[in-house]
Image (cartoon, rainbow, N blue to C red; front, side, top):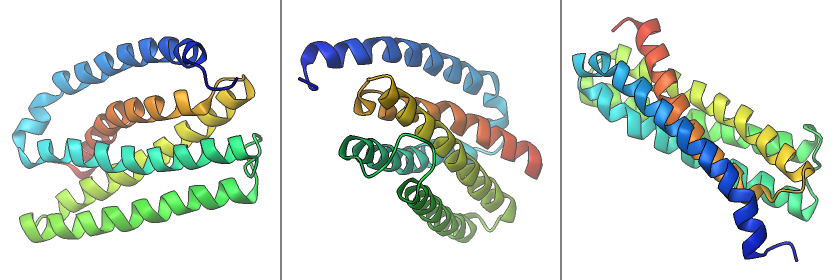
Length: 176
């Protein structure tokens, strides 16, 4: 049987243990750079927004790829029309979402720098989520591990850690 409690635990516990350590590392990155966020407190609000939106987009992509691998309409070889269409869909969704958020931030703050930070961090993080999602799903599937047990935890942890790094990078590039 493919879905058993024993197999789910066997697949999940090692990766969740590793991801717990990665989350601690991500928290330390935020703690170390907290003063940059405190210079302009609105930047603190960007963290859950960027992480949440990209985590959601990545989770949808991960679920679609995992289901596609199970059903067989996506092949585990990093190419194919269906995989490419799912990635393009995630990119378009991210672009539209972060353009809308950028417009909203501009209306609230009238700061083009904040718009650039939000949009840049969001789009960079989306690319990071895609680069994390596809290999995680395909490699876990090839190794006989159910991607449903691995992909979403990896993506949510990735969004948390990479989101902070993308925001810090955009803050540095934009110059706040």
